Image: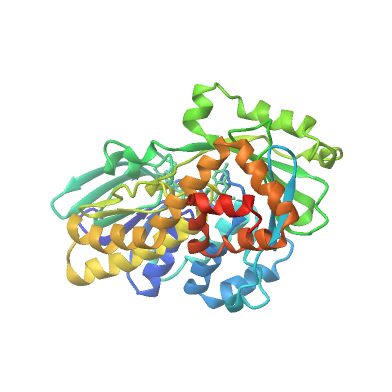
Length: 417
Ligand SMILES: Cc1cc2nc3c(=O)[nH]c(=O)nc-3n(C[C@H](O)[C@H](O)[C@H](O)COP(=O)(O)OP(=O)(O)OC[C@H]3O[C@@H](n4cnc5c(N)ncnc54)[C@H](O)[C@@H]3O)c2cc1C
C-alpha cells in the first residue's frame, strides 16, 4: 500500500464524503474513504433535509428517495414551514408542489444517525474501500500529490499516497486546517445546539418544520423540526461572533424560551428531553473563498458551504461531493491535478451554481438584526395570501428571493401592492 499511488482518497464519510464516493463509483474510479468513526454514527444537526438533498439523491439513484419515503418509521416528509416573528405573530407556508417531484414532498426530516447510515451503506461498492475507525492525523505534500497518515484504534500509523484528496471531514476536520493554511473559511461561523424531545405538541398542519425568531433568543433563531415516532429536533442557532461578544449562554436561552415564550411554552407541557443537549459549529462561506488547490478539493463543511440564513448544509455537502467526484474524474482523465485546473472545474462551477444563493442568504441573515422588520413582514403576510405565496415560492425560486435585497419589496408590502 505504501508505494502505491491511488488516484483519489476521500477524508470523511458524512454527506459530502459519501456523495463523492457514490459518484466516483458511478465512474468506476477506485478510491479509499477514511472515516474516523464507525457507522451508524450521530452528527449534531437539525435533521432537516431540503430539496437540494432530494435532487442529489435522485441523481445518485432514482430509487433512493422511494426507499426513504417508504420507511415511514424513520423519515417524515416535510410539507411546509412555520415562521414566527419576535412579536409572536406567525405564518404557515405550505411548500409549493413541484411538478417533477410529483406527489413527493419537497424535503424530509430524519435523525442523522439514520440517514448517514443509509447513505454509508449505499456507498459500499466494488470501487470504494471505506475504512471506518480511521483517523487522519497528518497530510503531507509530496511530488505526486499527498501522503495521508492515519491510525486505527490500535494506534498503529498507516500511510496512503494519492494524486488527489477530497477533503470531506467537516468543520473540525484536518483538511480545512492543513490545506487552507490560514483557515480563512472559519471566519463567519455560527453555532447551534440540538436537543431531542418526545411529545412536543405538534402543529395542526402536520409535518411543517418551524423557524421561530423569538424575542428571547434574538439575534439567534429557534427551531422545532418534527421527526417520526413523536420525536422532535429542537434547537437554537446564532452567529458565533455575536454569541461570544454578548456572552450568550445558548443552552440557557433555549430553555428559557421553552419555559416562557407564549407561542411555544404550552407545546412543551408534556415534552421530555430524551438526550443530552449538544452543540456544534455551522461553518458558512459567503465570499466565495478558494476551496481547492494543488491536488485537493474541499467539500461540505470542510469548505464551509452552510447556508448562512437557513443553517442548511447537507444539500450543499451532497452537491459539492457530487461535483468533486465529477472533477476528480476529469482530472484523472487529463492527468492534471494543479490548482488552476481544479479551481476552473470545481470552485468556479460550484460558486456559479450556489454562490448567488449563499450571498442572498447572507442578506436575509441580516434581517434577524432588525426584529421590527421581521414583525412587519410577518404582520403583513398574516393578512395577505399573495404575500404568503410569494414567500413560499422564495424557497424554490432564487430570482424571487433576490427581491428581499430590494427596498421596493418592502415598499410594495407597505403599500399592500
Ligand atoms: C446545530 C446544527 C444544526 C444543523 N441543522 C441542519 C439542518 O437541519 N439541515 C441541514 O441541511 N444542515 C444542518 N446543519 C449542517 C449540517 O449538519 C452539515 O452541513 C453537514 O453535516 C455537513 O456534512 P459534511 O459531510 O461536510 O460533514 P460531517 O457531516 O461533519 O461529516 C464529516 C465526517 O468526517 C469525519 N472526520 C472528521 N475528522 C476526521 C479525520 N481526521 N479523519 C477521518 N475522518 C474524519 C467525521 O467523523 C464525519 O463523519 C446543522 C448543523 C448544526 C451544527
